[in-house]
Image (cartoon, rainbow, N blue to C red; front, top):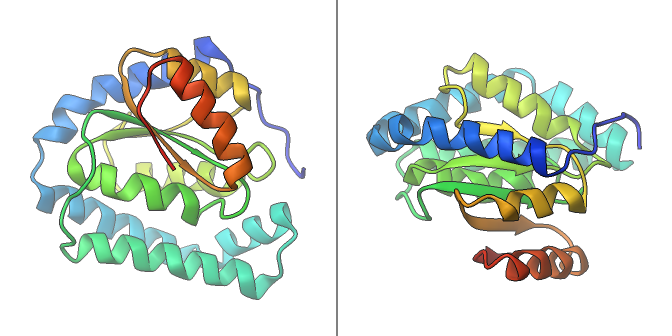
Length: 198
């Protein structure tokens, strides 16, 4: 672990969900084309910082530079495909996205992009072992004119996931990463009666 992050719990999770819920009506009211245009802006911003993001991934995961750069390129392709008019699929509402450190940028985006395009707002909980790519991505959404509250970051471990699942406004929990961790996350979601997709 290269950086210290807060280990958030229920209170912080509820604050993040409240932010996402407050932003939901205006975001859902946008056309798919308008949401796609914002994803285009995010892709352009990410392309400008591709080397920086690859460095964050490499530093925190121990992967080599080529592998980290490949992940950033895949993330760019994902954003560009959505912006090019891929159909909006997924659930609207407030969606929680949990990911591990296997793909700290691509993993959350694979789950978040279809949801965002469909009109959902998201709360992303990255791995505490590799949080920086997701955190920097959240900063880029703000620079790319995303409305506040549409893309939120919640740091922490299982306690943060418990907090997300306890929030009534969260309609779906999505997971990207190792199946062993996915089983733990699924158990938490099931205990709280939350739909879960891995």
